[in-house]
Image 1 (tube, rainbow, N blue to C red):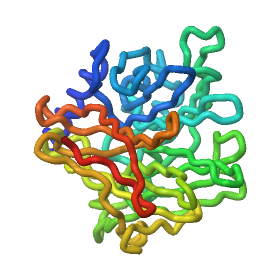
Image 2 (spheres, rainbow, N blue to C red; image 1 turned 180 degrees about the horizontal axis):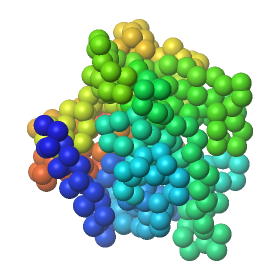
Image 3 (cartoon, one colour; image 1 turned 180 degrees about the vertical axis):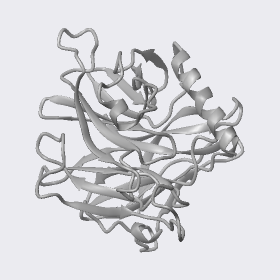
Image 4 (cartoon, one colour; image 1 turned 30 degrees about the vertical axis):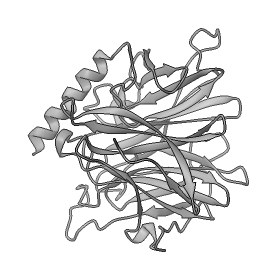
Length: 328
């Protein structure tokens, strides 16, 4: 199984590097989107942070990666780093686009979340320049039982920025950021926001069986909704990814599902899962554009060797909970 997963992972590297000029379902992993002017900018896992643009959320054109060269500090965190940057998140605040990203060794918590900023997303603008701010948080095997990967930023009603993040180990975390959003605020505040059974007698450096990752917190009405992915990505036809959700009136939680089960106790209400056409779907983001809420995620396409493709769906709300159409 390990060989199969590794083979699929490196085939994804090749396809991501090759790219597709224009398509309605680009090869995509872990997508996030921002809109500037009349253009949507998508950022996702890939060499240097892969990017696409679109005018209509339907047809996407491959753009240049964010990093022409790898972050200088990356190999200090993960010595085997090969330029493939994971799971970005983007937010506009204080006059700049803040693009967070993950540096990690596959399957390990040898990881860090970094930050790169730009005043514009338009490469034709004279002010277009990505400036790396370095690492924000870092996890180290046998020191930390959490994984510094899959960042998402939410600004609460008081204007305080928070970062949710995590994958496997002891689950997903929330940390309060400073005003510049480039480090944890002092004194530090950390909260658990989702957790599954890790198993017993698991070495600290082992991810364990607690298959959850990719938190994304979205405010709607009175609630903060935490979306997260359960089960396994990155396995092609053996991928079992699915998307679940919980909600809380406090950004710090506790988040509960429709049955009232806390996400920190294994709770989560299903939003969407794979079918015979898509082996698994997950690692989503949610944004409001022109008065409509959309979720962006990737799914493993059964008609194309299980390659991960972009999925865009409108989010509707019923009885205070998000609803998206099932996969075709």
